Image (tube, rainbow, N blue to C red; front, side, top):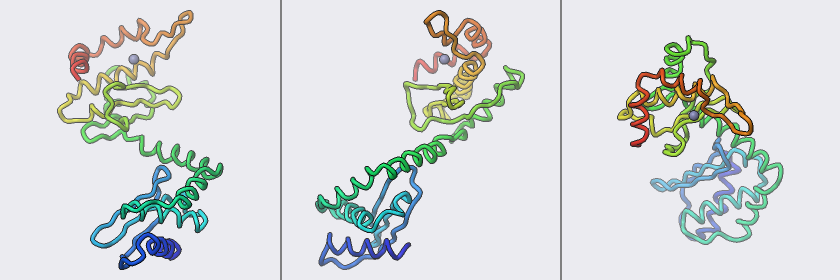
Length: 228
Ligand SMILES: [Zn+2]
């Protein structure tokens, strides 16, 4: 812990709880994927994590954060001057653009998880690639979706060359052929890019549909997805 953070938290604590005994503090800067600050109290020790994006912030901004966190922890009112100081700092153009970059970089890393609890999407891709495409498709980024969406079961994102499959399928009670079918369908999108026929976008052209029928458990898989 930096002595600076320790000192700032002590001072803020005194303001929020003038007469209470001083607890032990463990405060650190932490690499969240967003500007985020957390606090909790466990067995008399206060643990706080401040976004490392704020490590270069002026002292009064860190003081404002410490005040906000401690006030929340102890159910006290957050003083307006601290709230507005922190808000103003976050609104600074250099700070908000840094936060934006951070979300993109770290957010993407969090997003990309081909290895789920049950199924490994890269392994499924390679297996299907061998069975149906003579191993000729270049593997895009494969990832489980962040949330278990039932609306968006799978999609291929050509802009980021990524196949995303909804996390709802990463479960032992979901048969492997269902996951395979979803990945296979997206692999066909990879192979058959969306074409314009007149002004209409042809997302599943005939060649796509014919090739989809080659998947042995097609009907079973479609039935299962309908029931989901
Ligand atoms: Zn499709």
